[in-house]
Amino acid sequence: MIRVLVAKPGLDGHDRGVKVVARALRDAGFEVIYTGLRQTLEQIAEAALQEDVDVVAMSILSGAHPHLFPKAVKLVREKGMNDVLIIGGGVIPEGDIPALKEAGIAEVFTPGTPTSDVVKYINEHVKKD
Image 1 (cartoon, one colour):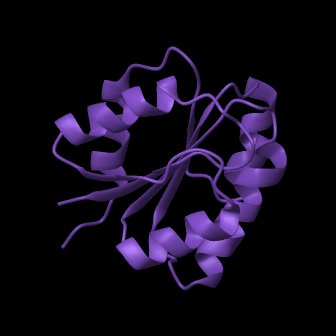
Image 2 (cartoon, rainbow, N blue to C red):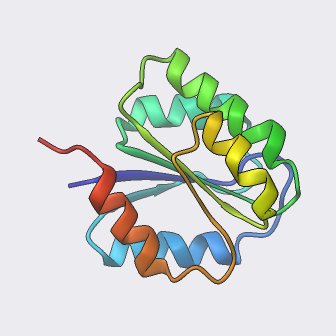
């Protein structure tokens, strides 16, 4: 079973969308661990390690994604989780997406993306034995 850590890094206090995504992932058969609001990047990376997840899915609506997403990738990779798929979502301008991908975010999902697209992406990109 694919294990997905769903996280809300930083001070962003809006979680309705991320809860919808978490529920859709669960309904698609993934095991979902939701860390809750206002998590530090260190807490997210540590939770990913402790929970032995296949995917880290972060949501940011605050505009802090250019700083927080790349740092999260760095922290996850520093813990030796080089095969973990890291995806992001939220209110992210199209112009910011190439830099996020260059920093290690595998895919970025913006508002209005069908949850089925997120499920499909994870299924196609997680390497399970």
